[in-house]
Image (tube, rainbow, N blue to C red; front, top):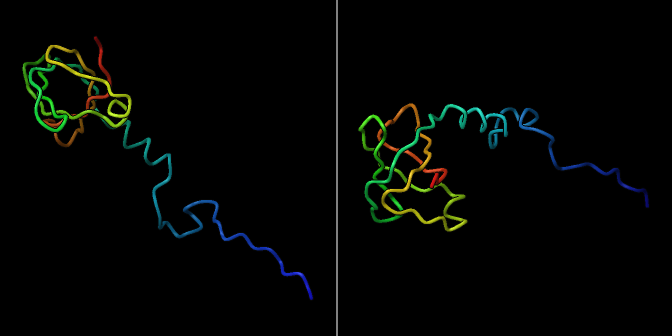
Length: 101
């Protein structure tokens, strides 16, 4: 019996798939860099790990905890200073990424 040639079924990148499939890592980093980082103080705690955060400008935004903070069980209470990421498209919502206190 003759040995069959071995072919790899894996493809090295999305370019070989014609642009289909999940985005590459560099595209994901570009999206994260567009986020606006701001600091604020938690003014109220809402249901479902949601918070009302007051910014230095006096505006209040609705914020939720990022995945890493949920994973590490970081607790937040009223009065905590937090760092948030906001989308430039919707400035009324944010994601809390760091507790400063």
